[in-house]
Structures are given as C-alpha cells and as structure tokens.
Image (cartoon, rainbow over all chains, first blue to last red; front, side):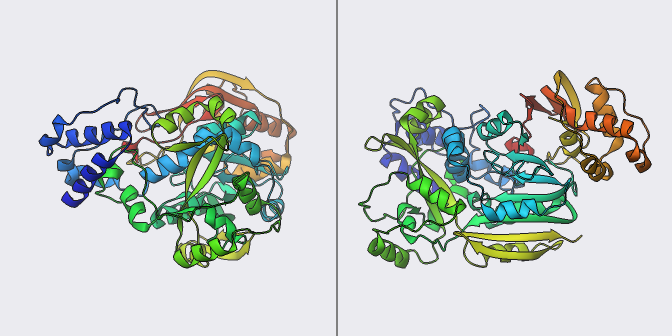
Length: 386
Length: 122
C-alpha cells in the first residue's frame, strides 16, 4: 500500500498536467494520512473537467478506509478506470465519426443472423451504432450499448435500444432467442469481466438459444497494423484496474506508461479506417512497408495482448463533439496537427488462439457449437443447454 | 421504448430480489404503426408476462388487452391486433422506469431507457 502511495507521489511531481496534479492532490488530501502534502501549490487547476459521464464527480475513498471499501467497489461489475477512460469516454467522444465508418456488414455475422428462425428476438449487447440491428428483417432486435451517444444514433435510425452495461444486462433470464456480441469483449480489461459478459449473453437467451461472439485476435492477418498499436505492459494495466491501486481509486489523468514503440515512418492516413474495415470486410491485400519493424515488434511482444489502438478524430468532427476539448485538457487525447486530428487511444485486450474457447468452456449451461477464425477475429457460437 | 422491451427489463441493482416488472412513469407516449407479424407474435407470446403487459399498457393509456389469456387466442386476428398494438406500437418517449423494490428511477429520454447503475448499486 505504502509503495503504491509513494509511486503516486513520485508521479505527482513528474506529471506535466495541471489537471492531474489537482486530482492527485485532491485524492491525497482525502486520505488524511498525507498531511505533509497539503502545502503543495497547485497551479492552473481551475476548470478541471470531470470525466464521469453521469455528471457527478468521483470522490476517491480515503486510504484509511481501504478495509471498508467493500466488495462492491472491486466487484466484477464495477467499471475499471482503464475502461472508463480508454473505452467509454473515447467512444462517447468519437461516436458520430466512428458510426460513419461502421457500415460494412461482416458476412459471418450476417449469415448467423439470417439463419435464425423467422420471428426470433435477437439481443445485441454492445451494439455500437446499430449496424446489425434489423439485418434480418424477419427478426426483432433489441440493442444495448454503454455509450449513450452511439445509442442515440441507433434510436435515430428507428431501432429499439437502451443504454446498459454488457457486464450486467438489465434483462430477464431466458427471454431472447439469440444474442450477439460483435467486437465487444476485447474492450473488457479483466478475464473475470470477459467471462462475466459471456455468462450474461448466455443467461439472457432461452434454452436452445444461440450466442455469437466475435473478438479481435492477437493473430492479425495484416501484421503491419500491430506496429501502429501501443503495447501496454501488464504491470501498468494492473495499476489501472487492480484493487488497492490508488490510480484505480482516483480520477487521475496520468498518462498510462507504455512500452516505447519504434518510430513509425509511414503515413497514418486512414489507418484506423482500413484496420477496422479489415476486421469487417473481405481482407484487402496491401503492400506492407513495415516488415522489418513489425517482425521486431512481434519478437518483443510475444504474448502481448494489451494494447492502445489509436483513433484519429478529424478536427472538424472533434469540435462538433465538444468532448474532445475536455479530453485534450485531461491528457486523454493528443492533437496531431499534421493530420488535423485529435488522437484518442482505445484499450484492447486482443484474444489469443483458444482463449475465447477456454472462457466459454467454463460456462456450465452452454456448449460450443462452432468456433472459427475469420479476418483477424476469433469467433464462437454457443448454445444454451440448461 | 416499446412494451416488448419493458416486458424484458428488470432492475439489476445489488440486493434486489425481484426487479420485475419496472413501474412506469409516463410523461409522453407516442404511437407508431408497424406491420403485424403473426409469426413473431406467436413466438413472443410464451415469453410475455401477461399481467405486466396489461398493466403497462393501461399506464400508457391503452386498456383493450384482455386480463386473462390463453394460447388459443392467437388464432384470433382481433386478439393479435391488440397484442401487436400494445407490444410494438406504443412507445414511452419520455418518463421513467421504476425499480419495484428500491424505487430507483431509470430515466427514459427520447424513447431510450438508461439502465446504467451507479457505482454503489453494483
């Protein structure tokens, strides 16, 4: 505990961001233990943007209360900081732009949906911009996503949707005929949460109901894309989600340390678009300029599964959103004037071969009926048996 | 939010034993016609908690649903039309859903329920 606190203090002094300085000092003051810190001057701390989407500021619990924190804070259903900052807030900020790039219907998902009996009720958990809602006109879809801006886009298109958390679906058990989770679970930062999300999908469908899950694979078809991702060391991911971590308990905006990557010397234009599309459309072969870089990257990152994947939000889109000003002030996003874009990072835990199968096998009331690799995604179809 | 969705939704707040059905606070209801699919209605029928649907429809201003039902009524076009109307054509645009045990309100805005829990509710 003390070691973690000392590390926080060290980061406090090294931090470049006025906002994060205020936040750390605030959390330390709350603790009651660090009376010597109270004299520290805080400059430029007015107008700190709170990052909590419901408008309430998070008051970190004091260190002395750590035994009384209760199971609930560290419960599987409590959203870790890394997901709040590098998944939820990012998608909220980029929603319209993101949605405009999500149009291609992945054939495997389309096949699954088209094969469902007429009149089926399909639940899409993590539906994003609603790309798959209504894909089979003989089925009725209910979608949910944790991002209200994305759900708004779905609703504007006439879909039946709600804002909810895939870890804790507000649905009665056994109600749906089928469920889908397309490119969602790789945004969950712990194995327990990923497993819990699968359990929820199985819970909400009827006995005999099918569940389709797809996630990004470690084993990317286009290896050069990996060079664009920022690998995260386990140690730092733990700091952002582990119990007892002061970072997990305070709305700190300290930049997450990462393994330094090689200088990339290529154009980043439309990298995310082509990467996203690659996951979702027939694979387009492209000349890789980055063979030597990506090979070295592979060597360094064997077993590497935690990444930040950038999203470039063009300036003209960022102004419309408004959330970007806040993100920039908090150090969550950076400006890239050369590209004229605000660069966000999205947290991913990419899945290795067999990982999805292993997680699903641990679920008592479902069996695996199909599993496959397709276009850099691991996919699985489960059937609920009890 | 349609009543089909309402019939599926349940309060998942920590400690709640039975979060279904959610109460409905109505501020604005709209009606939107959609094509009737008998297949779909027959598939849905066994899933529906009928009393919750009847009560919810009444709250939304529609009192035509029979109190008691059995599956033979699915052969009746008149019944299917009423079932269809209540399930799919009534939309709660503005209002709230209310946890039956805690009274916690989940807002419904522009037809979208927000079922996200606060930190202390998970």
